[in-house]
Length: 557
Figure 1 (cartoon, rainbow, N blue to C red):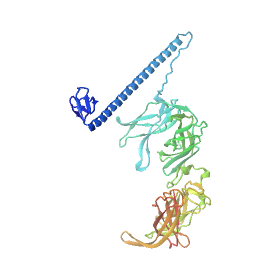
Figure 2 (figure 1 turned 45 degrees about the vertical axis):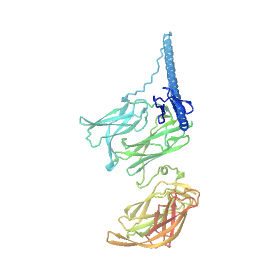
Figure 3 (figure 1 turned 120 degrees about the horizontal axis):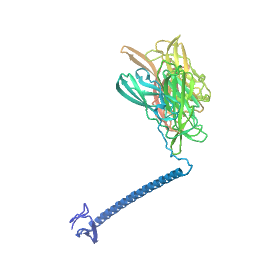
Figure 4 (figure 1 turned 30 degrees about the vertical axis):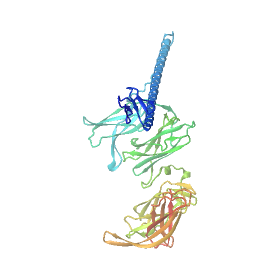
């Protein structure tokens, strides 16, 4: 016999059942053939055969364990089935026994009927509206629905079928914009419309209604602070909610629906949004900032309301919707109006009075006449924090410019994360159609304050050199203008113990009287490790009188 060392099989019959029967001797247990091999081949063959046997044993053990597992599962299912049959039989005996007792009342098993008649969700007269403004306006179908089923509804839906005469065009579905619609509540809903088609009528149908799967009665939630603000055409509702539950329950799924009305009570806009925090522990709070889609822009906002839906959160993560009676909170009046160019942050709007910075402590210095590099007129000024103990957070405002009684546009004050007491922030004012500015008026944004030492990480800014230069620019290939500039070099060192990133540096030129004569922002500075410094070099145009000194203002974030 010979052994195929590639497949470890008998060369005579092909069997893989080989057994060592002597020194360097192997016998096929199938056909009895005997083979003699060399010592080294014998040792190697023995090791391989042992591995094959071990693998076969492992595979047989795994198959046996799987068979036992399947058998135990079948036994468990059989036990459950038997117990179920016994339980049903016992219930039947109890039921039949109670029926046979003299004078006993029949017992009927309770069946939960979750179906709710769809005619209980009343639909108002639909109307087509445009949502958005200008060329981006989108046609929608607005319908106001009212829950008269007497039960709370979960994710109620409406289907609209659109027609051109008798020709069916398309159909669209939409859910009402609140997860649970309480009994007696009304809500608007916007349904998409097919674009580019002539729609002469539509048919609305309420889809299947159901109660919330898991719900409990609880107190209504309201904003501890809320503001409705308008900037141009944009309307926002910002508010703060807190978990004031005394039982220590965690709250989640906080959602807000806000609705706008005109003086006739007609819906002219609504918005839906969620709390910034996904869950609220007892005593915690979060904010909500939602944009409100408007339609019927010709109508002024005369009243608005909001409602807050929420759930309790179990330790397992399971959520239970909280049902609250009379949760809709209505306010009569128009929104607060702000300049559209102001950047109003949520926290700026919701800050308490004790957190606010008094804008009277900000001063805009007198305008300084100047020229740009093509000799067009401009003006320079500086914003100064006159407070002695408070840092203003994200200062901002809109400067309106006037020449006599004629308005000449606006300049937006932005880009600062904070301004410390005594610091000066440089600003350009560039007239549009006139050569002079006789007056400025400032509309400040709501601003917050911070106590010293404030949020800034300390840096050491050092100017190491200045070099006056002259440059020129060619305008329209016909006019050449010359201008003065200063090349400023220096270093920024981090003396602290932490890495400082996102450094912004304003380099300002000043004349011999200390007045601003030009400035430039340096934004490409890298992060600075503790104890290290980085160089900077910037070319600053001189817009006013000749410079005599250089000052700097920096920000870290």
